[in-house]
Length: 308
Image (cartoon, rainbow, N blue to C red; front, side):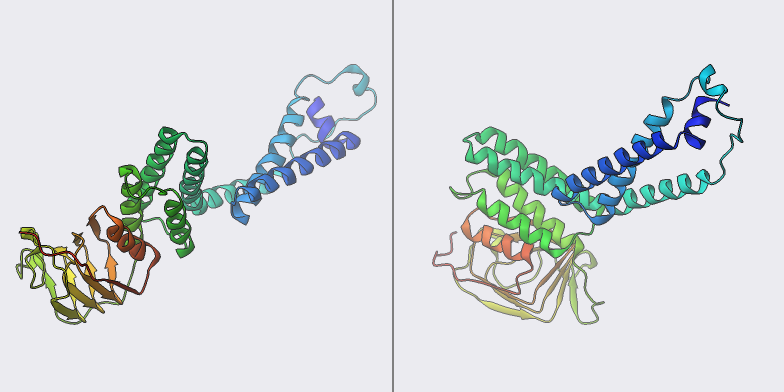
């Protein structure tokens, strides 16, 4: 019999002490995980991991030949402990399932954390450091978009509010603007809707080449008023301009959405798996915010004149 056998089967005071230390450490680690906003599943996984590490570390101390003083006080016992196998397997399965299911929460938390750090850097006057954190948040959003990682709607509202706090001087920071666009595209890949059965436009199908609408904004004209109302339809696979049109109960699917800053009205509009090329000004930002937060209605009447 080895010292490890003695520890597991006979040294009850040492076992009780180790269990107390392990449980205390596990609860403390779980509290730290809770303070970082991790889910209950992750809190449980952290707690079990810490408890296991403490128990294993203590047990490894006994992996040496049994000392003669203990040989006289104990009798040999069976070294195989089958009852430990189900417990180990159950813990391993639990940890794997938690890690596989809850990784999206960690990725989403990374975005929130980087935006928080960017705000702290701005408050400290370290603009370059703030830009670095914004870039990291944008890269994380790209990975989430590519993986179509599901997150609750509150994630987009929180991220949009953070980005709003980071632009005290307007949209002069291109990194901040890219983060807005990436957040809108992330929201778009998660939007779902019922199967469309009406009449729609599919640019890949040969219907049109430049989307739909009466204003030739692709030639550089920016409409200052609404010139057309389009409702109850679907635009698919199109490079679609939004300017100069009132969009009501419309769906855009797999399209490149463009906006130059002209007059626009939208109500009950869905963007499904779309990309965005939005003018970098205050109105463009408002439009991106409306898309990100799922705003039901958006209205802007520009006072500018069409430019040739």
